[in-house]
Structure formats: C-alpha cells, structure tokens
Amino acid sequence: MRAAGAAAIAVTLFVLSACSAGSPTEPLTPPTPTPPAVSPMSPQPEADPPMGASEAFLAWLAASRVPDVKTACAGLSPDLAARMIAEINATSPAAVQSCEQMIAAAAELYRAVDANADVEVAVQTETTTDATLFVTYLGTGDCGTVVMKRAGTDWIITDESRECVR
Image (cartoon, rainbow, N blue to C red; front, side, top):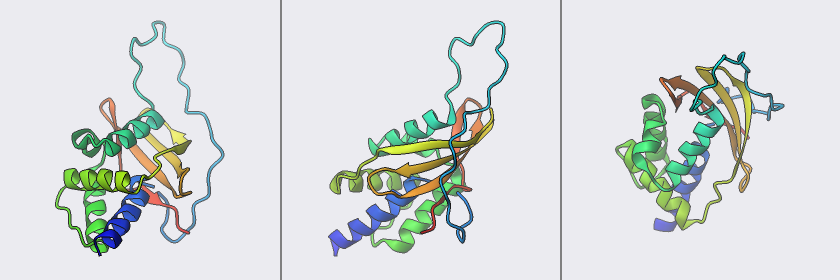
C-alpha cells in the first residue's frame, strides 16, 4: 500500500511539477519555439540582466528537486500551490498541509523512483512581465504549459499553468 501510495504521489507530483497551461479539454501541442521579445539596446548595458522565464523555470525545478522548499514555494503563486496541495490530497493517501510539505514530499518521491528531471523548454511568448512556456519532461514525455508572471525581479508560476491532456 505504501509503495502504491508513493507511486501515486510521484506520478501526480511529476505531472504537476511541470506546472503545465491550456484548456483541460483540449490537448496541447508543442509550439514552434520563438525567440523572446527583444528590446532596443540601452546606451549602457545592464550589469546583471534579469533572469528570463526559461531560466527561472529551470531554477525553480532544480530548487524543487533538492529540495529548497523556501525557494521552490516562493516560485509558485498561492493559488497554484493550493491547487497542487488539493490535487495531491485528493489522489494520494499521504496528505500534505503546506507548500513546503508538498515540495519536500515530492523531492523525496522523485529520489525514491529515480525520476529524471531533464526537460525541454520552448518559449511560446515572453514579455518583461508575462511568459508562457511549453515544457516537456524528457524521461516520461509528460508535458504542459507553464504560465509565469514577473513579480518585481522574480518570476512566479501561476495557477493558469496546466498539464497536457492525453
């Protein structure tokens, strides 16, 4: 029973960690990668340019696997974290009460099943404040659309993110 529960959590969290978007009734198809919007060069280049959405997602994914629960939870909107917690609690015998517990449990399960965290990220759209990424987990083929908003200098993964419908 514990192994089945762990497997259910692992599958749920693996799919959810893609924080994948789109209508739950329509299958998503990978977009043709497009370069991010380019702004005119300023007379003096920034010493430390802000991180792009793709790099922010990859940093979030790495933090979620370590786990660095503080960093990983900071990268999720409160609504997305609440949705993920509810989905896990609805499909798994192991209940979690907080984002930190969810991230820690997911990281433990990823290690237990030796889940591959390699992803391919295609930018669908990106501005200075909003981005939509199409993410495919290479080990499983799981995919989804990750919708992000910039809060100050940090990117946040929003509740508009959805997994691919198969």
